[in-house]
Amino acid sequence: MPEKFLWGGATAANQCEGGFHEGGRGIANVDVLPAGKDRRAVMEGSMSMLSCDEEHYYPSHEAIDMFHHVKEDVQLFAEMGFKCYRFSIAWSRLFPQGDESEPVEEGFRFYDELIDECLKYGIEPLVTICHFDVPMHLVTKYGSWRNRKLVDFYLNFCKTLFARYGKKVKYWLTFNEINMLMHLPFMGAGLVFDPDENKKQVQYQAAHHELVASALATKLAHEMMPNAMIGCMLAAGSFYPYSCNPNDVWAAMERDRGNYFFIDVQSRGEYPAYAKKMLERENIHVAMEEGDEQILKENTVDFISFSYYSSRLTSADPEVNRVRTTGNVMSSLRNPHLEASEWGWQIDPLGLRITMNALYDRYQKPLFIVENGLGAVDTPDEEGKIHDTYRIQYLREHIKAMKDAVNLDGVELLGYTVWGCIDLVSASTGEMKKRYGFIYVDKDNEGSGTLKRSKKDSFDWYKKVIASNGEDLE
Ligand code: BGP
Image (tube, rainbow, N blue to C red; front, side):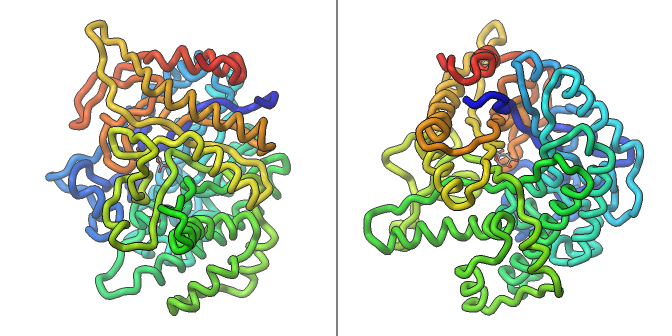
C-alpha cells in the first residue's frame, strides 16, 4: 500500500463512550434508543421515545465505558500499530442543549485526553463531527434538522471544535453516513413525524439543511485550518441487478442514486439532475435560501469516505423483492453467490472493489474506507481466549480487494479503519453480542460484565498487517 497509508480502527461516541450524564453532558437522540424489539421503530421515527423510561434498557448509557478507559484503550490501539483512529465527538457533551453559544469546558476533558493520547503514540485522529447524535433539546424544541436553525447550532459546534483541535486534528468528517437520514430518520437525524405529514418532504428538507451545514462547515474548516482535509461519509455498497433484465438494471441504478444523491451534492456541489426531477415528480418542495446554491457549489469536500459491509441486490419485480435479508440498514435480496454473516449481512469482498471503483469513477477524489468489518458472536474458550478466524478471514479478503482497487485499478485511497476495533454496542440492534473488535470487552446484551479488555487472535494478526503495510495477510 502507499507510504503513509492510514491503517487503523473506528468507533462512535454513543456506541463506546458511556458516561452519558458525566461532566454535564446533555441527553441526545442516541441515548433514547432502547435495546430489544422497539429499537427499530424508534430509530425509524415511527415510535416516539423522547425520554428514557423504566421498561427499556438503553445500551449507550454505559456502552463500553471508554470514558473511563481511554488510556488503556488507546494504548491497545497503539500496540496494534494504528496509524489512525476514527472517533466521533458527542455534540451534547460540549453543548448539552445544543443551542447554547458557549460550550461546557468540562466536556472537552475527555477529548483533550483522547486526542493527546493518540498523538503521543503517533496515531492520526480522524474526527467524525456528527455520528448520528443530536442533542434532545434540539429535537423537542426545534424539530431537529427539519429546522434551518440547526445549521447555525451545528456550525457553532464545528467552530468550537476547529478552534480547540485545529492544530492537532487534520482529518474531519462532517456527518456519518449522511444517507441514513432517509432510512432511519430518528437515529440518523433526530427526526420524528406527525402521522399526517409528508415524511419524504420533511426528510429532503432536513437533508438540504445538513448539506448546507456540511458545506459551511467545510468552508469554515478551510478558513480556520488551511491544511485540514474534510470528507463526506456514505453508507456505501453498490446495488446489483437481480438479473440482466434491463428493468432490474434500472432498479439497481435508482437505488444507488438514492444514496449517491447526498455525495453528489457534497462532492460535485449541486443537486444532480435526476434528483431535481424526482423532487418535482413527487411534489416535494425543498425550501432554499438565497445563496444556498453558491454555498454548495463553492465548498465541496476534499475526500470521500464511506462504510462498506456488503453489496446489495434488487429487482424490479415486486414478487422477487418480497424475500429480503438484512444489510447495513438497507435490506437486500439474498444473493445466491454470497455467504452471509450471522446477522444476514452478505459477505462480498469483490463488492468492495466494485464500490471503490464506482465511487472513484464518479467523484475523482481520494477515498477513505472508514468502516468495514464483521459483526459476529465471539465465544471465549476455557482459557478465555477468542479464536476469531472468521473475522481474520473476512478482513483478509476485503483487504485483498482493497489492494486490488488501489494497485490494479489506480484508485486513490487514504486509509482503512476497521469498524468497532474494540467491541462496542451495535447501532442497528443495540446488542453487545454483535462484536467487531480486535479487542474483546466483557459485557453482555443485558449490560452485565466486568468491562475487562482482552486481545482476540485478530489483534496480533492486524498488528502484522499494519507492520508489513498490508503485505503479510496470513
Ligand atoms: C454503520 C454505522 C456504525 C456501525 C456500523 C455497524 O451503519 O456508522 O455506527 O454501528 O454501521 O452496524 P451495526 O452496529 O448495526 O452492526
